[in-house]
Image (cartoon, one colour):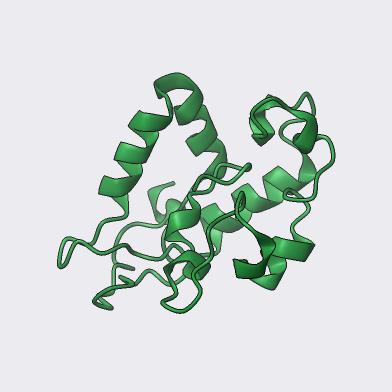
Length: 140
């Protein structure tokens, strides 16, 4: 469930909801939040859709305005920092399997093994607050 921009869709509030969870950017629109299905300029990008793997970093215009906006939002505006651009670079260097292994560890709740949400900083299973983890702003 890695989005074209490099976000891990499995840690999104839409994917973690109990009723009709979103299946990610590559899934059908009927399970996606409205932003993802109709307003996301990355998902609807006609250039990206022509790329062999469909990932933004394959594009000659990368990073574009849309990917930079997504990068800034996810590294600065949410309780738990996530860098889509760093994710794509890691995937290119280490491979998708290594990336998914890293993500499982990074986003697993030590209290119950559930998944924390990038948007809320809370575990979707037990509700534990993980906002005490350093945000990207605090790391810089």
